Amino acid sequence: MNESERRILAAQGYVELGLHEEARAELAHLPLHAADRVDVIELTVLCHMGDQRWAEALVLTQKLCELEPEEPGGFIHAAYCLHELGHTTEALDLLARGPVTLRTKPVYYYNLGCYLACLGQDEKALNLLKQSFEMDGSLRSHARKDPDLDRLRPLLEKP
Image (cartoon, rainbow, N blue to C red; front, side, top):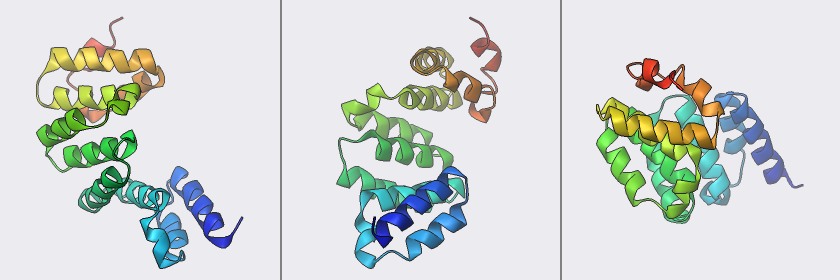
């Protein structure tokens, strides 16, 4: 393992622990050409998102979407940033235009449900959220704390 790979691995570990400053410090020591690597961009996006630096994260997510147009991650992150910036309708539009691989991800349906709930489209939101729970049961516990779903929570608790 070379020095760059070690730093990227360390940054991944720090991101998983929520230690974004430490992750950024590892990434800062990478050679300049490494900044264009997809994994480095994604780690930087996750750091920005973890620090609620939505606009900065959004710029980088757009680069991810360009570099990997068939990968769902950049689109999911970009839509989330748009939503957090108050552009929920644009987030829905972005996901609708995203790659078909999005539809294999439970978080895609979960986020769609959250965005629609915020826009008052409760029935559609509930159906999508239930679909996400069927794909990944752990999302149900996340929904219990998600502020986007405060209004729908009583309906989500029903079987």
